[in-house]
Image (cartoon, rainbow, N blue to C red; front, side, top):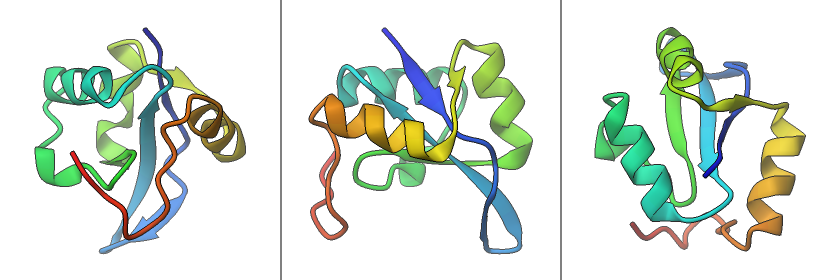
Length: 89
Protein backbone atom coordinates (compact mmCIF):
# COMPACT_ATOMS: atom_id res chain seq x y z
CA UNK A 1 0.00 0.00 0.00
CA UNK A 2 1.44 3.34 -1.02
CA UNK A 3 -0.22 6.70 -1.09
CA UNK A 4 1.72 9.62 -2.57
CA UNK A 5 1.38 13.36 -2.08
CA UNK A 6 3.03 16.24 -3.90
CA UNK A 7 4.03 19.54 -2.27
CA UNK A 8 1.31 22.14 -1.72
CA UNK A 9 2.20 24.31 -4.70
CA UNK A 10 -1.16 24.48 -6.51
CA UNK A 11 -3.10 27.71 -5.87
CA UNK A 12 -6.86 27.81 -5.65
CA UNK A 13 -9.59 29.43 -3.58
CA UNK A 14 -7.07 31.55 -1.67
CA UNK A 15 -5.05 28.53 -0.52
CA UNK A 16 -2.28 26.25 -1.69
CA UNK A 17 -3.05 22.61 -2.45
CA UNK A 18 -1.41 19.20 -2.80
CA UNK A 19 -2.60 16.20 -4.77
CA UNK A 20 -2.80 12.79 -3.11
CA UNK A 21 -2.96 9.52 -5.07
CA UNK A 22 -2.66 5.76 -4.68
CA UNK A 23 -0.66 3.47 -6.92
CA UNK A 24 -2.85 0.50 -5.98
CA UNK A 25 -6.55 1.42 -6.08
CA UNK A 26 -9.13 4.12 -5.53
CA UNK A 27 -10.44 2.10 -2.59
CA UNK A 28 -7.05 2.39 -0.90
CA UNK A 29 -6.99 6.11 -1.62
CA UNK A 30 -10.51 6.66 -0.25
CA UNK A 31 -9.71 4.69 2.91
CA UNK A 32 -6.48 6.62 3.51
CA UNK A 33 -8.20 9.96 2.86
CA UNK A 34 -10.99 9.09 5.30
CA UNK A 35 -8.44 8.08 7.93
CA UNK A 36 -6.92 11.58 7.88
CA UNK A 37 -10.26 13.37 7.71
CA UNK A 38 -10.38 14.35 4.03
CA UNK A 39 -13.98 14.87 2.96
CA UNK A 40 -15.31 12.90 0.00
CA UNK A 41 -15.87 16.18 -1.87
CA UNK A 42 -12.07 16.61 -2.03
CA UNK A 43 -11.86 13.67 -4.48
CA UNK A 44 -11.28 14.93 -8.02
CA UNK A 45 -11.56 11.94 -10.35
CA UNK A 46 -8.24 10.23 -9.62
CA UNK A 47 -6.78 12.20 -6.71
CA UNK A 48 -7.67 14.11 -3.57
CA UNK A 49 -7.03 17.82 -3.30
CA UNK A 50 -5.40 18.40 0.09
CA UNK A 51 -5.00 21.92 1.51
CA UNK A 52 -1.50 22.91 2.64
CA UNK A 53 -2.48 22.90 6.30
CA UNK A 54 -3.45 19.19 6.05
CA UNK A 55 -0.24 18.17 4.25
CA UNK A 56 1.58 17.30 7.52
CA UNK A 57 -1.36 15.08 8.53
CA UNK A 58 -1.09 13.09 5.31
CA UNK A 59 2.69 12.69 5.58
CA UNK A 60 2.43 11.83 9.27
CA UNK A 61 -0.08 9.09 8.43
CA UNK A 62 2.31 7.58 5.89
CA UNK A 63 1.81 9.34 2.56
CA UNK A 64 5.08 9.41 0.63
CA UNK A 65 6.26 12.85 -0.47
CA UNK A 66 7.08 13.05 -4.20
CA UNK A 67 7.28 15.79 -6.80
CA UNK A 68 4.28 16.53 -8.98
CA UNK A 69 5.74 14.90 -12.10
CA UNK A 70 6.61 11.75 -10.16
CA UNK A 71 3.11 11.65 -8.68
CA UNK A 72 1.54 11.74 -12.16
CA UNK A 73 4.03 9.16 -13.44
CA UNK A 74 3.12 6.71 -10.65
CA UNK A 75 -0.61 7.31 -11.08
CA UNK A 76 -0.34 6.70 -14.83
CA UNK A 77 1.86 3.60 -14.41
CA UNK A 78 -0.72 2.14 -12.04
CA UNK A 79 -3.43 2.61 -14.68
CA UNK A 80 -5.39 4.92 -12.38
CA UNK A 81 -4.97 8.23 -14.26
CA UNK A 82 -8.28 9.62 -15.46
CA UNK A 83 -8.54 12.47 -17.95
CA UNK A 84 -10.54 15.49 -16.78
CA UNK A 85 -14.23 14.98 -17.34
CA UNK A 86 -14.12 11.25 -16.66
CA UNK A 87 -14.47 11.28 -12.88
CA UNK A 88 -16.04 8.47 -10.90
CA UNK A 89 -15.72 7.44 -7.28
